Image 1 (spheres, helix red, strand yellow):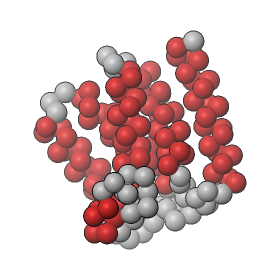
Image 2 (cartoon, rainbow, N blue to C red):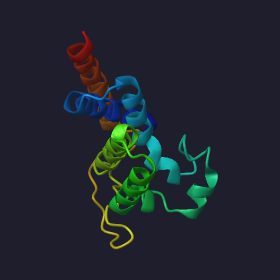
Image 3 (cartoon, helix red, strand yellow):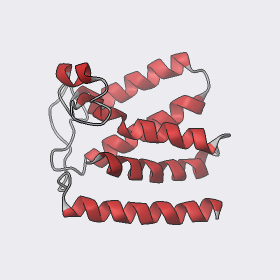
Image 4 (cartoon, rainbow, N blue to C red):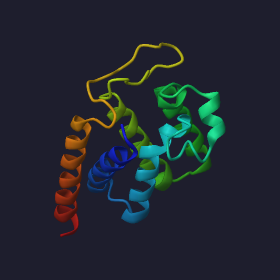
Length: 152
């Protein structure tokens, strides 16, 4: 999936999480969700985030360790140790999870149980395809409607 698609979906999930968790600062919560929604692609040397930290893209397989539930659990554990309150951890995990979920619908999929299993959860959407574009437009419209519902 494209960067903008992960942001649009992350934003939608973030808005739903705001309604569910009522964070004190919705702007910071949303920004952290958005950061988490693109973070897994740090393992792709040509992604927006991977270009900034190139070494990770060369050391790790794209949609391998950083797209696994093991990494999600490890980052959750480490962040919980450093940040005693959930104001930073919860939105990052929500955004990160949204990325993994969305990539399950990509035709290349993810290996959720990597490195223990290379079985892929995959769907039918090709990156940059018309299907992804239509879904992106739908997400933007849904984001806007939900924003109006929350703040309008």
